[in-house]
Amino acid sequence: MDVKRSGHRQRQAEATKRQVATAARDLFATNGYVATTIAAIAEAADIPAQTIYSAFGGKAKILRVIAWGAVAALDVDRAHEEALAAPDPADGLRMAATVQRRQFAEMYDVIAVYQEAARTDPDIAADLHTIAGNRERAFRRHVAAIEADLVPGLGVDDGLAIYLALVLPEIYRTFVVERGWTADRYGEWLGAALVRQLLGR
Amino acid sequence: MDVKRSGHRQRQAEATKRQVATAARDLFATNGYVATTIAAIAEAADIPAQTIYSAFGGKAKILRVIAWGAVAALDVDRAHEEALAAPDPADGLRMAATVQRRQFAEMYDVIAVYQEAARTDPDIAADLHTIAGNRERAFRRHVAAIEADLVPGLGVDDGLAIYLALVLPEIYRTFVVERGWTADRYGEWLGAALVRQLLGR
Image: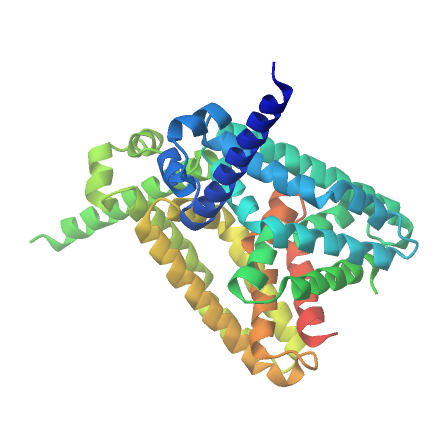
């Protein structure tokens, strides 16, 4: 086997995948997941539909590649660990707000498409369930780490409920997508709301 | 024409409509709008499908009857007027929070079904658009009425954005449907959040 040519073929395959993912992300965000066909993605990416089927296996797989690519680039887990280890819990919550702000700014479109796709595709629904579980565990770890500083009378469960409500993607949508706030302003709002409602400051 | 018999027939037709609406509301909330057929509603209500078609004209019409019935019972407009006329703006915002709490407690299931149905039914989507416009106008009137008391530097547009974010049905869902808070506790949370974020108190 010619290693150089095989390496070239692999790079080309990856370039094709990126091209398809980019075109698909645009179409999903603009027209919705259900309304976007492989044929439309093939036309937008200028790549034969058969090649797309061979490379990905279907529309849900393309969406997954887009989502995991976006998530991997954000390195959310490390950022969460840093946030919950902050000496001042208010700083930690503001750091957590920055993680959310970055996440939504980078991939709110993908999150919205995921929510839409989950309604009709059981694999995507299972993905979303896993993601929600991971998010909840990370948030609970954070709230538990600052338990001693919570508003008197507020337990970890209720603190987590408040955290989960404040980081809802629909709030980002309202402020940034619908009302024209910058992502930075949303991040500041979220940080202040978390600090106020969890720590009473 | 026999007035007595005609009155009787009308009462019977209304009773049939209520029976259908009740059965449909249960099925929509449990199985979703798209998955619920007229045949299933007919079976649950114990009323022939043909009678349902004659009385309503289709699934979207049934959903509308359910929604408008629930909305009419709440008398939201009068409650909003009272809230924005409260001498203390903090009391007014807490009254507005009570309006939202009552609305969600009475009909969160219908709101969720409406959001689902709007994705596939253009008439329901148009309804939802009208409702969102009415809500926004009512909220803007309220924020404008307390403009002088808003947090320094906060204008009516941004105050409205905060109002719209805090009253999102997804927040009610998180607290009450998913995390087991009582509707009353949600209402208190919302009142405190509105007062804090709009008035700085």
